[in-house]
Figure 1 (cartoon, rainbow, N blue to C red):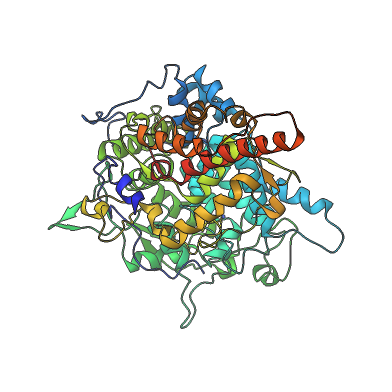
Figure 2 (figure 1 turned 135 degrees about the vertical axis):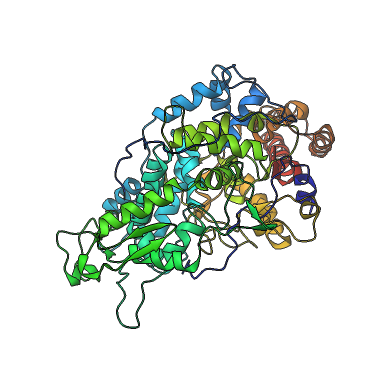
Length: 585
């Protein structure tokens, strides 16, 4: 529970349950077109730059060169973890210039990785979900397009599909292409992202609107995706003010939609199924297979699309084609005033802070509403607003609990981990007792690994009205499992057959100087936020590992090398096990 105490210092005034996705759902058992980059802005919006909160303490300007500590802090939010090279690069630049450079980098494609592996496998064998997992870790650890991949991971926890579902592991290239689609639209427009998600066949399988048929007799359209695209992926449960706070009527939150809206929207998502050169019944039900169907956007089959009247969120449709109905539905969701604060707050939570202030949410929502050039939904503007906000640069208190996947990617990047096979052979790490308790793209349900409004019950956080989403997968078993897992990973490596090993040469050179070793780890792992108390405790522990005198004999040399390594392993382990590390500032 030390993590809770550390996180209780989180600033911000965001109350739990601000449009939380806590209503039960029947879910959880998507196009890859290039983004247009812009949508016309319509209607009034909040000011583009709401006033900065009085208690904000920015740590450097977005357009001023950074110190090494500031660079490490920023990279911990915008990438899968800082390393020495990226810190040095950023100290010669600015946050704004770094983001601009990242926005220009070509996208690393996970489907290409999966298909390249398939091409070299022995005859009779095929790729599995493990190749999707490998590709994630490989790109997280070594990929050049860090910002895109990091935002894609954040989006994958909002627009959730999961290989825990029995329908998805048999389509690894499709799942990889879904993740690529998120990465593509991460730098595009939110309207295109919505359409990419809605028409991707992996989302169609996961939330069951693939093969969804029009009403007939006692049969009604499947409502699963219609519910979740509103509840989890666009507007949320309750009407919001531009700063993310709930609108109230007679002291109670106002629901954004009713079951009638769900039923009306469900009709829009009828008639969609696998892509192919025809629209026959056999193709609709999947009996005719196009080779590219796993990653090609679903097509509409008029014979199965509802032509009856559709009413949802104030929009009335009747008699239109499946494509026209879909456009009208997604336009309606896109233009809803909730989208900016609802999605903006979750992106802040995934990248920066569990409890952003209303003013911070308001500034991000304003960037969503208008990028300064009349464009609504510009994700580049939203990302800039999230990462360049003064609250993002403030380091006075803990902001969020590091989720397990990001702890391991941090270790890989900080210590330049390399894969002996070149493939980053990571297994499934779902087991909280023996591994991380979290595997990318394998959340237990459509509600992700944790909900954005979660707060540990009867805790100091809940008493303060704060949330800590990642605490939902944190408990005694998972804490013990993480510590045991890292105790093996740090000295021996991670993955199948310890395929992934760190390069500790820089740390080993400092083993005889524990103070300098801790300074390095403080920069790489904690962005300079290590307290003097923790620093002194770890230095004392490291000094407890004595270094034998060098006598020139082979045995003495081996003993000295072992002692140096043990000092480095201990220092890294104690740092990454500390509540100060786990509670990211």
